[in-house]
Length: 156
Image 1 (cartoon, rainbow, N blue to C red):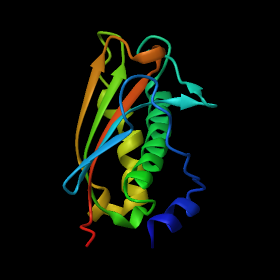
Image 2 (cartoon, rainbow, N blue to C red; image 1 turned 90 degrees about the vertical axis):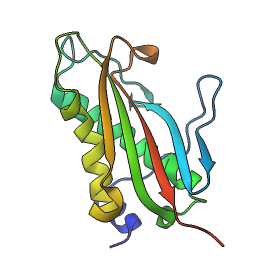
Image 3 (cartoon, rainbow, N blue to C red; image 1 turned 180 degrees about the horizontal axis):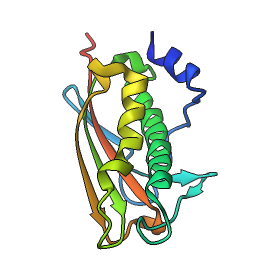
Image 4 (tube, rainbow, N blue to C red; image 1 turned 180 degrees about the vertical axis):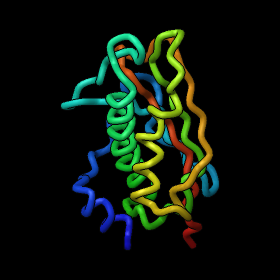
């Protein structure tokens, strides 16, 4: 099943590439690797604010990380020349979770992103290395920010 068929089956339509909120670009390609800038969680088009372990629970954090994954896939589509079929491998995900000092479920929050990438791209392409960190705060008070590295197929 193609990536687009999986997205359709999941009821996901990809957003356009978000306009950067500061002095950076959405992605940079070097060789066959593409590095996607951090994407913050959004709900109803606005920053999804909250701090895990204070006013946001792990299940809500997972939903926020899943929302970030959808935005990342939209940006990845642009980086892949408009065709997700050009993605050879999701290489790495790095997740930053806005959390209280005693919160310890960053890895579970990040599963919201990782699991969707696996569903959309399949195990051979979607399985990836990953880091999940707790941080004291994120831009605009959002609860999760995630960046992604992918390998693209060589285009002659």
